[in-house]
Length: 280
Image (cartoon, rainbow, N blue to C red; front, side, top):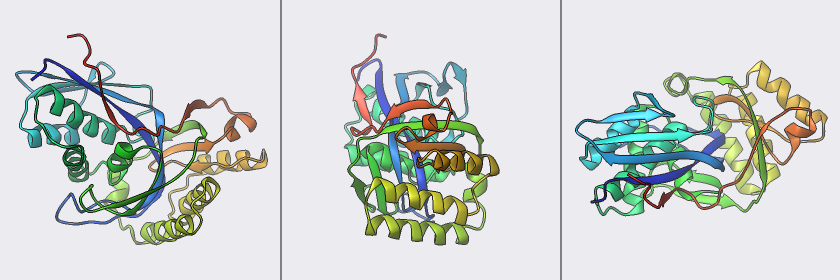
């Protein structure tokens, strides 16, 4: 056992998704597609007498993280840092759950495989109600297409080869649990159609187009997001809404071209990784 371990997990913006409930949280999840970001969450885990979780120096309650620690049977202090907005569609909760699993496995020498750790984190986030597909996509990296729901032992993943600049602007937040707990029939129908579009033509343009259509047909598109996407289109660009948040993202320079001052990063292809142990 080491005194401390650290993991980096990329942020993740989902363009479209469906929901799949199951009594087994490792089988529950979503189909859909999204982009892993070079900007992400760094999670540091060290043994402690009592569980404590913080984000950017502030104490937080994070059910998914606590469930991961329970599953691994450890007591630890978990400290996360990120430059990403919280609650705006960047998969921060999933990143914290996955980062905790990877770092705790190293810190406490649990000797679990990558798939086992991703399964733990995915199941924890599903049970917490904070996400359905971020964890598996963050573990893989790139522009991931989730063909079947669930954790690694049940899902099926593909991807779209892409090396793109990513821009985003955040206008506000949306409550994930409120959407996931509501009637999702319309959302699921729109997500199924979007997935079919991308499977038929697995390109970046197809992904953005399908994501834009999904936001409209699912009823999740907000007026401010719509206005921003329209501005980007007027400048000859392509933009979509990040699920679930009032965030607009572009693959390329669309927001800059439309006169916005976006945050800029790139697609992260490596997935989540355990890093060299920081100083204790």
